Length: 306
View 1 (cartoon, rainbow, N blue to C red):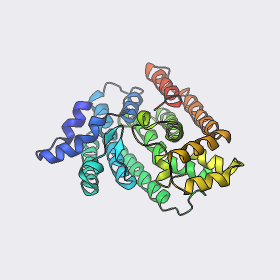
View 2: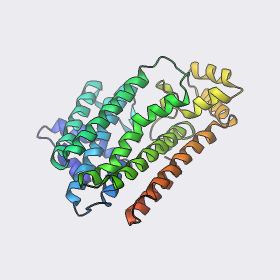
View 3: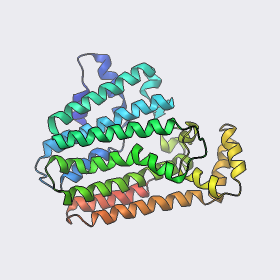
View 4: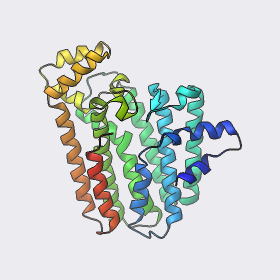
């Protein structure tokens, strides 16, 4: 698949190839394409070329959204490497993301079915809508847990759910396969994002490949903060710290308040509940090696350190 990613991004214009392939050099988990391939194992797995093409397509969609996110967030690093916007500027980054989206849908048009094309189009629309709603909010530090869960559903879970079912969908799988795969993917996506938001607080720039508290600095209040602002006896101090900048001392105190409030444990518990829900969805599927791989993946994502 890596060769296919490079090939589809290759252009007769050297600058286009250099800019669009830049994010590939930073690597990544390749979670979404792995889910496409594993989901496809549940129905006509012999269609490997189709599955690989769609796996590459979802990775390109993911990559394009990250390039655009880095412009919105004015991020300078991702996975320990310069972002496209940091190296070439915002305009080039936006155009690069658009180009990558086009490459993704070229693959989808080739390997997808009408149902796959319609489903992926709805998914991308919902992802964009979720980001627009989130950054259109003016209620800083007043988001509810329901607001947060709705946001991460659109930000992360629907695309991971789509990635999990799309391989099987393209191979003509019935609803008895698609619905459990989608349910698993949605729960996995919720778990993944909550863990990601916890790591944004407790992780280091070295392990994260980007600065800590990045979401908060960009105006996004994640689950541990929502819990602490609701439950902590130190909520007023926390609000003051969140409003006064992010010096090393302030960041350390913010982390201490979250720990004293049990907010890290609370968020981790919610992530574990979603991981358990994902495992229950898998029980509805045939007991094949792909199901066991998906089970191990859910456990790994819950306990990951980066």
